Length: 230
Image 1 (cartoon, one colour):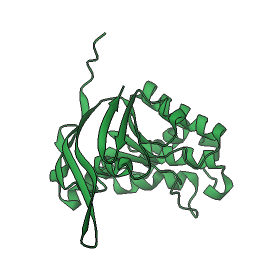
Image 2 (cartoon, one colour):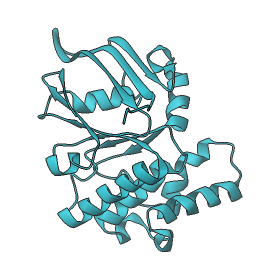
Image 3 (cartoon, one colour):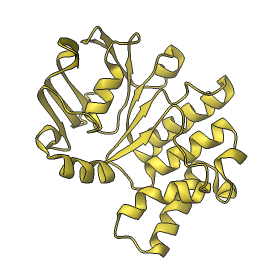
């Protein structure tokens, strides 16, 4: 059956270099590919291959030297820093390896943080946070602080925080890298559910071939060059 999914991310001729003193170090070279809406894609490659840089460019955290990235038809490479910050707040959910939770805030308060940048009322924020925590099966831990939660539970809180604004894309940088195998399986299963049942487009950087198997599409980077493996 022919795939009729439209691309939600369109990358064309993307290049990125970094400067180390007078030396220019190329990281990505002329990358072009599409990510269909509702897909679960894994970016793989050895350390230094440019996969985290590519993820950061797609998420609007970093700026490319040349080329374009369109997300839902919007060329984010043309946005000002101010507009890019606003765009990220609405359109991108972030899942990090080390959770990035604030220790002095409860699970509920950590998940609520992105909503404080919106016009939602306190009651609406509560409803959104409660729904997100239910989705990750942590509604009964909403009053717990990060230090009172296991690593897997903390990552679930981080995922709830990532999805609470109903973003266009979820970007995950080594989301299971700090977890034991059982917790990692739980997190990968949850991400698969978010993709399959809720239609979330997920872009995941991982070193772990087992984690990558959960994705529908794998893109491999070798020294900044893209190799495609379906």
